[in-house]
Image (cartoon, rainbow, N blue to C red; front, side, top):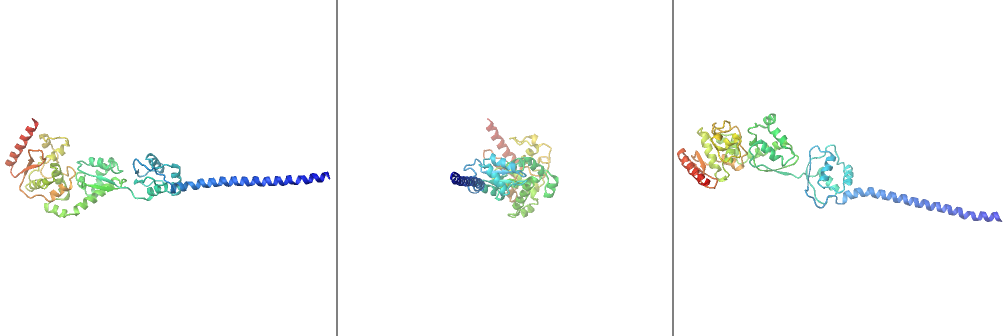
Length: 366
């Protein structure tokens, strides 16, 4: 009786233990499942975050990112961080690996980034998107060194690599230029090109633009009719460029110099003597300039100088190609502030005009 009672009481205890074990297992399973769910949610959140949520700030100080040629992924990351293009670096790095954006040498160029882009959009654009071109402005630089300094402000190529290319004998020979004539390849204008343009590509583009210029408006035939090569036309146009800013009188001045060339008279162009001495800050041409021994000084040597004395604008080039027909051999500045000139056919008439201008200058000094 007693032993039977003990046995009957022990059965519910065992059942309770079994039930407790099962309950504990269910809790453990739930905890594990919750942990796995959280881990899965975390890993799922990374691509969701990079794909669908804005990662580029809504406001950018500068929307353009420039990636140099040969840059590594870490260098690109530093550029993006410095420009504040990425809010979530961890996600960007993770997504860059997944999208195979990371390379030994990253794609170079200048790219415009839109505020509010996701990391996916940013990576896609840097990897496959169109570059944002730059506008290279060429005006009236005198020397190749000045051209190199100017251009290097717009493209990736630095001034040193540009000037080395400008003076590379092999490259110049293949391109059909010399160091003295190369500046005639530059037609002053505004050109769109990619920021990651190197020195040789830049020069090749300029030569292409130069050829496009000469292919238009029957310019080559006009040069031949004058008995001049394209480079000689450019050289004379560079002198006209430095003689006057008044477009209206450029064809008249071009006609004067063409008349002098025709009769084998020295050009005696003040800008050539200034170029010969490199005294570009002078406000008055003196005997020092006109007697300076240089092949560029047309007071000393007959004919055209070895090459242009600066870039020549399109109006100056077209003035030489379409000169005014007249008998003028001389010109001097007018006795006023117009910056234009008085023309004469004879030296006697020229001396009268020059005397008037000198008298005007003396009154201005008082």
